[in-house]
Image 1 (cartoon, helix red, strand yellow):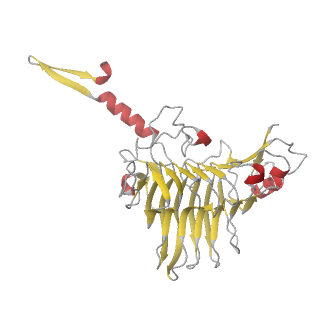
Image 2 (cartoon, rainbow, N blue to C red; image 1 turned 60 degrees about the horizontal axis):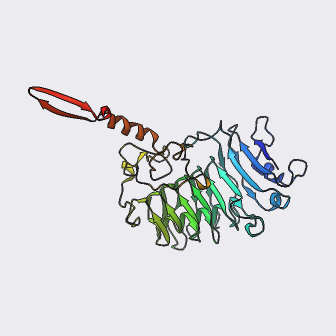
Image 3 (spheres, rainbow, N blue to C red; image 1 turned 30 degrees about the vertical axis):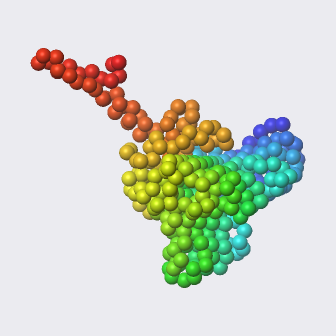
Length: 358
């Protein structure tokens, strides 16, 4: 039983595509029963492909599968800064562009992890519903991923960025932004949803969603449709949270973050470094209302590491809402606290003490 790590990229790697790596997961000359398979992507060039992770590797005896960016090729929380996956091909049916379809009943849940990868710049013009990252028939954990600039060109069809019809996927510390349906007017039958999950067992923790739009007559765009939601920020969406979403310790730019621990009607300009379309930087800015307002969610599943890999738990931090733990903001706050002082007058002399002197 070993962890077998293979490199993926176009410059002297084990595999040139993610598809080729996945197709080899059942290769007995590479893996033994009980092994863990890890595919590490390098930022040699943009990956332009659609792929599926199915039963074949598990049927051959693998215990779990991880697809991630190599430590030298992780993004920094902004577009085009690390490993990037896109798909410029034709979308001709309603299956996901990226599909995770192994049978969790047979092989167990939470067996596939995708982390530290940017998925972006994919458009559909065919008259089909699009599931961008489709959890299929199982549980998937996606961590610290950037997903943005996804378009649905059919007014009457749906666009679901992440989720599944009957499954309970988990998303931790991800950012989804600038995704939507582009036609104006048109049919009212299609929906735009960033997180589409049909189970309250889904966990959407410390995610940031911004600018999810539906330009059709329906204007029916949702940030989070269902699931257990903690420490999330959703802004610039027709409906940030649907009533089925069990949200707490979260923020919305409308009134839908209505739990007593949450904050509604927040302006994204006061939260993020940049909301300019095409130049988004959804890290938190100093003074944002999300700072130190999150709930400590522990360390299960790697939820403690923010979009940049900063470990909230190891650094004993108060949790912020959203995918970014503003470490710089915390340093600024600590420095500000150190500068606080008390002054009083003794005779004609003013004596001043820093709080850190006590």
